[in-house]
Image (tube, rainbow, N blue to C red; front, side):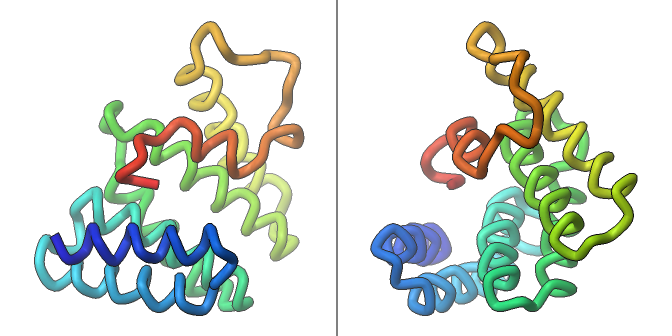
Length: 148
């Protein structure tokens, strides 16, 4: 339960723009999950994504990339994690764009994120929108509240 609370407190602090406090709670939650439920649990992956956001903000790009890779590995090809996977793919693609990595690499992640987004939105997807029109919120909205 502690990891869930730390995750939630981190989200509350982020919503209040208290990003340093948010980072502390998210990092503590990630550490707690790793020590209790392990490195391969979907809740660990959820906090890998959250902490990667903080690392990106703090310009610790290699750490952010590592955590996104870990999250994607955990979510794998299990369809019930498609919303979380779509978000992680989107964030990885955007990070690669930020790093001005090869367009081919970032495009691979972003294309897969877009396809999952459209699949998950079903009838609500606007197929005129490309990946450049989507934001973090478009992917966060796909995810149940306890994994945000």
